[in-house]
Length: 401
Ligand code: NDP
Ligand code: HSE
Image (cartoon, rainbow, N blue to C red; front, side, top):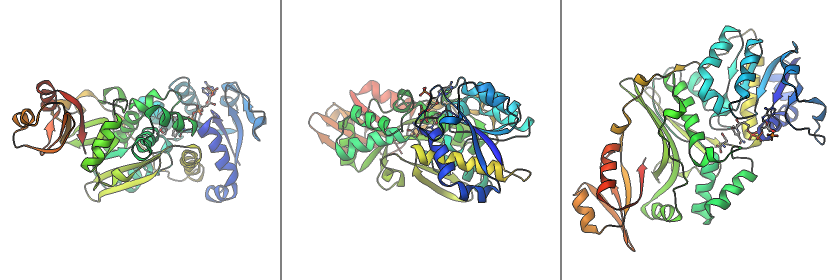
């Protein structure tokens, strides 16, 4: 019998208890051991829950109980989640988590602590919700040098953009619905401003390129500037707007960014709708591999948390392949102003003014009531895109995938 504790009994924490209970027999068979939820730490009480008798409010009860060998942290936020995780690892308790804020900021240190204490720190649920993407990268794609990753990594924003496009829902109404469904962060600004996706890109850089890039150093634009007009224009041009996390490595230098992008309908990521996430990984041996599934939500996310629990419990005394990375230093990062991609501009200038700036090097795709929409024929660097913005009256601009 393995005794474990849950930290945080919210959407994911309660989902974790539900998965462990509903699939108890199956999980016991996979692990070769029964898993008991001995404690649940939360700020609140849950008198109506079947787990009401396990709820504690003092973390020390869990830390000081030698029977507890595994802790699932699903409180969210950096503090005290980071301190609690550290204390558990130092006390010889393995930790699993869905908390990408902690993994992206402190993952290197926490993995080292786990290693030093002979325990595990696993975080499959921190990227892509229920999609088994991280373990696939560090285990199943281990024979590859990963060259790039492009992903729809945030369920809330994908839900909002899909609702705006498919049902004409307003941004605010779609966000409120995503919150109600349990997809959004406690502070949804992290979702809509792109920070949550940047944290996931940081973790992907760690597992794909061996370097955990600090989320604060990832150029990030969210979806708050996307209008119904942008969505409509993109659809007319044959594109879908998606919040895309991108990372690639060239000549040892990593480029990482998050921004809304026009995704051509020929790209499989364009068809990833609602709360679903899609992650396209390019390896130098395998080529393109796509991971797809629910990117947020109670049971899908808990499914990934419990997969880590099973991995740890069943691997006891065996060889669990563990994630590994070091912190990226500034020299590991490429000069972002040189990053180049095809661009979309919607401008209020005349077609002749537009032609004078772009010459023949652009596709003038759409002229509407007082605007011209342009998609460049060739990739353009960030620097060049900034110059265009100085020359023309740009109503909207986006990178194209
Ligand atoms: P919730 O806000 O629903 O749950 C967090 C729970 O932890 C709440 O009950 C909260 O109590 C409790 N809590 C917060 N601080 C403390 C503390 N110091 N001590 C004890 N309990 C505390 O969040 P989610 O379940 O949605 O998310 C949890 C984590 O999982 C986050 O890191 C999130 O980013 C991540 N995640 C979430 C997904 C989702 O779909 N929701 C998907 C993938 C990852 P109170 O409510 O009283 O503050
Ligand atoms: N708020 C996050 C999202 C939860 O919407 O994707 C899953 O990480």
